[in-house]
Length: 267
Image 1 (cartoon, helix red, strand yellow):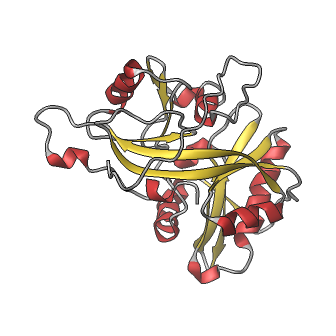
Image 2 (cartoon, rainbow, N blue to C red):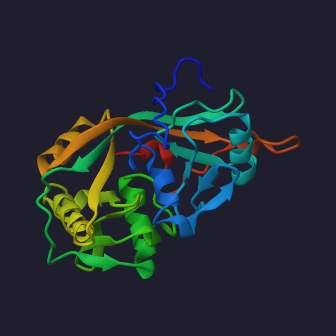
């Protein structure tokens, strides 16, 4: 772990059993024990999504050595793991590859509305979606991420140039994610239109939209505020590599930086 780059301050544990607990305080956990339970792989108290769906895994609010051993066993030696709303850093022998302060924002007065140009995207569109993500780097988007919820896109001359969709899904809430626009159409308001269209679909189900942004990305935070989102709480993102087992090759410690790498989480 680079000594010159300190970890962000861990969030205080909120205690899911307390009266103050809220589904968004530990959104990965709330998703994997709620509407996304069919995705969940489990070992002990650790839950995770399939690694080709999304890299996020869920830890209990207060972790111990056994929890981190279960993370390692579930992910495998040399694997990258990603944690939202982390409360405690991993053991000292884990390599930290990404960490960032973020904000969690919720719908307060979003002018949600369908968009006549927005097209529903599905598995057949994944190759183009991955290409757009590779060009724009909005955050982790993998071959099966589209299974997490509704994704909408806008095409120009048949080419996918903008998209937005749904990711984490705590009961009563849905996260808007994967918002990206090709450089060729920036400044045309396509991202705003798609956010409003995705928010409309979420509200139609009787749920409330929310999203995450890097705290350092003040431009994005201002944009979301102008659309009617408000900051609910500070949060943090962490990416780490499971220590390689005895006899493992050096390559085992190289994290996967595929489409939408961890470095771009929360943009």
